[in-house]
Image 1 (cartoon, helix red, strand yellow):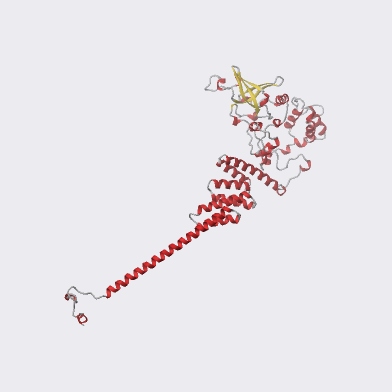
Image 2 (cartoon, rainbow, N blue to C red):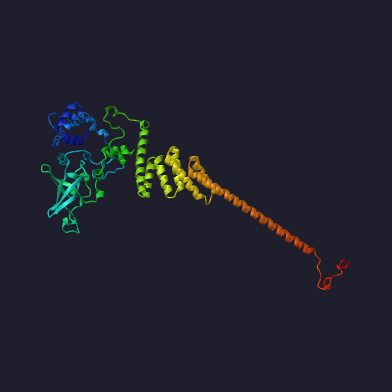
Amino acid sequence: MERDLLRQTLSFHGPTLLSLLRTEQHDNPDFRGLLPPGGPGLEALPPARKERGIANIEIQHFIAKKADLLFSNAWKTNVPTTTEGNEENEDYYAVMPPLEQFMDIPSAERRELFFRDIERGDIVIGRISSIREFGFFMVLFCLRSGVMRDIVELEITALCPLRDVPSHSSHGDPLSYYQTGDLIQAAIKDIDRYHEKLTVSLHSSALSPSLAGTKLGVIGLEESPLHYRRSVEVASSVETYDKVLHNSLGFANPAVVEFLVGKLELSEASPPSLMRGLQSKNFNEEDFATALRKRQSSSWALKCVKIGVDYFKEGRHVDAMNEYNKALEIDAQNVEALVARGALYATKGSLNKAIDDFEVALESCPTHRNARKYLCQTLVERGGQLEEEKLLNAESYYKKALNIDETFQEAEDALLKLRKQMQKSLEMREKQAAKEERQKEKKIETSAEKLRKLLKEEKRPRIGTSGYFPNKSNISGRNLEPLLT
């Protein structure tokens, strides 16, 4: 039995819950020793807070009936817990503004709730409103620990005395380091609930043990809690709580269950449930809702695509590509992510990569209009690049585009133009070949004519320089007779 959790619950809800627990759990041996009829039990309970009123009586009845399940140790594991002061990651689950920001609650009641729930050691954030010789005053904006509250409009002030302001080596006067308007993160030191006065400290010793190591002092707006930044974003809009929740990236994260189970230290070996019939059930992997998980992955991937498209419109192409890749890591067959990434590839000139993405998208969804349209356009553009080098390859791209969409006019016009160009090129090649053939024939004829001329010159008799006879010095007795005949 979780004694500490039960003690906190009783301290919060007061004697009404204690009475209901004794009534509902009187037969439970675990509660008999903890809640004896004659005394408070739990080794002297701390003073109970003010009764919360009849509005929560149904919640108290539920806690009393389910106490054996709610405070059971069976759900606890050895998973290390995250300290309250750590910044939450919105990718894992929805970090929302306080619910009261979406409700019409009187300021007086909100102040009462704030001073009821605030505890020593909690972390608050606010701006310095004035600096005096004895310290500085700050107007509180939000809490970083404990119960989240929307307190910007409540104008709650806190004093940070001079003794609680650490000195800096470069400043003789500790207060000279600070200026009016600085955003300050401080720890609650003293609380006067009756007069609604708070004292804060910038010394780490004022922090509760679970928040040790949290930075105190001047911080930037980007260092403020995520739920406060969300509050600032939502303050200027008229969106409902439900819409803000569903637009949160972490809400659709398929890993949210696993993450929250670890954060809440719940055991996966025996699935936790407040339905007693499911307490002893262990479900097999094939019983899990794979279709639901697939739909969740698709929804989360689409949110990444939407963010990527916004980045693309702003000209932040690297950020857009990162979001598209993240979407495809979540859902490798997400058609919208493939089409968006393909369009970005085409914009950057990587046409082959764009074609690959569009083709995969069409395989998954043959009726996707943009995938079909962009693929045809990219094929035509790629074909145009190849016209100067490889006409046949360019023709294949145009034909491929027409096979996808036979009514795509750009591909039809490009193919007709290319075929005319190919026909013209073929005719020019034929003319060039005929010209070369004629030149070759003419060259052969010229060579033959020269050869015949040479042969004629060889057969013609040669006449010497002195009369009809050759030079006597060149005539021998052997060839004289034929010459004389």
